[in-house]
Length: 127
Image (cartoon, rainbow, N blue to C red; front, side):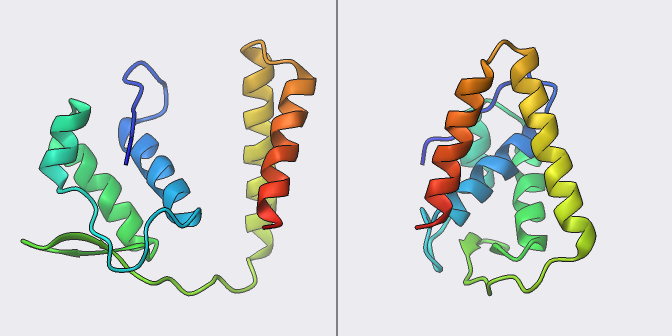
């Protein structure tokens, strides 16, 4: 697993870890029973405090992705497919997507490039 964090990003490091690991989990890079790197090891690899990694693991545990046991570490667990989302979930998702597009445009990405990337992501969802 190659995980990178941007210490200069306005996004908190623990959130970057959560988002990156969730992406890997959703894409099936980890199977139930797989063990994630120990908190201290991942913290050392990333050059950050171990509590930052521990917070990310706790969040993923609360979301139902990980089983955290003392002395056993973080183990990926089977997660049931989510049911029907709450109405506000769709609105929140759309707002976040709009914010990401606006952020990309503000940083100089061309609308065509953004559209192309969104299309690639949408095609990946069909698989």
